[in-house]
Image (cartoon, rainbow, N blue to C red; front, top):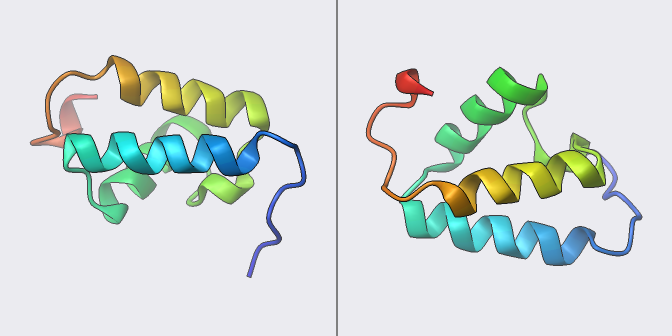
Length: 72
């Protein structure tokens, strides 16, 4: 298993992305697909703090639940 990053804001960012993914109705699989497409990784644990913050902002700015990830 990948070690958890050590930057101070990590847990907060993960919790916020969890909340936003739940709001959008994203499955873990949809989250992984997005991470692979835009960041080339399958886990938020592999993102830098800036990338994780960017992912959170993307989720916050997305208004409707994901129907088909193909349109991203």
